[in-house]
Image (cartoon, rainbow, N blue to C red; front, side):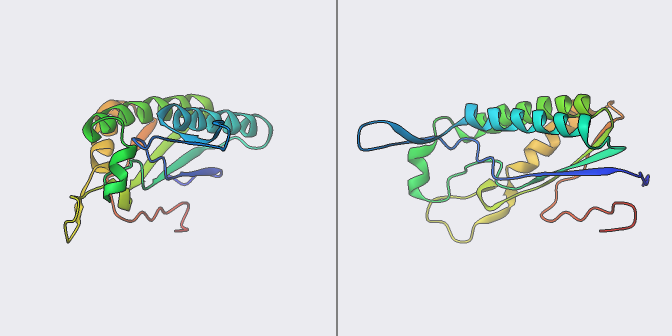
Length: 175
């Protein structure tokens, strides 16, 4: 493991892709809304904020990106069904491709090695309505990790760590 002087750490979580809702106020005005396009805009805004910091505050020698669970809005309960607008597998494919493009854009922005560490969340597990127990090992985020590994194979500046339920990163001797 290389030890760098300036290692950046970026943590993102709770993307809940596949979750779509819109709440309206008393007069029909939208007071809250969430969907793929909003999630995508927030992630792209994050790159813009990093770029602004990178140019004015610090230049990284490398960057560790932690994707910390709940990438998807899987069906945890019957009420989740009303919020899904496409099949879960289609959401996994679309989100995996988006995250690959996002990581590539981020790596180009910071211009250094990027290591992506991904853990699954409770919304990422395959679950069947009313089923006990839940299938914790059947985590849709594993598919994202494998998709990213394939996309970035042969790209030495981007490393995709194996999927795990827990991530501990050693950065210059500190966990």
